[in-house]
Image (cartoon, rainbow, N blue to C red; front, side):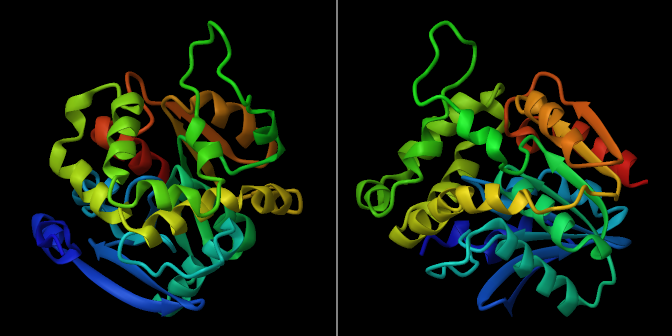
Length: 293
């Protein structure tokens, strides 16, 4: 094992934080916690791990008890054969919240983590004080409108991986031992500021995803989208305060979140690609703190 990419080594750069592992909902969750105050649960997305939040964790920990979770299928968490619909992944988080003894929590997520955070708020509203959605809304039927081909002259990055990650078994056969190529491409194309994420960060993520199980399990998040789209149809509007913090995903949040919320704020992070936690950590942390109060 590449020791420098292990949770035990990485945590040394974040004084006051510690690693924990616990059994919930038939799997193991790894989470990192530190700081004092109201609980703030943060969920990362693809192709990252809890390390996605390392630039904002110390800042947020001055005011909140920060708990960053590796989702089912991510990093050091379990990679079971099933259970990757966002409703069930939200249940993983719910069982952890109960284990930790919290009546209610603030919860936020980026990318796939935003899907799970939204699902948590929808399925466990009595446990959700406030919801933070970073750059990506929960899947709904609008996803079926995504074009299969890049549109001529359109100024957007064609998200081919949404389709590729739907394919069962083939991606892990092709990419095991080579996932770093995909990860390098994603960051090269989805970051505005290439210097905001260094080679060490990318190596952490490549290490986390580069096994057959790592690719299979993370792709299962995508393969559950049709179920997630079905599930959201049954959710009541969210009544707790919700903030959508968007960069390249701002318009998606603007289009989707008003349909599912009653108390919504929207803010745009300027001059940032999708990975705002890497590119604009101070601005993102400040928006979160202002919202949580």
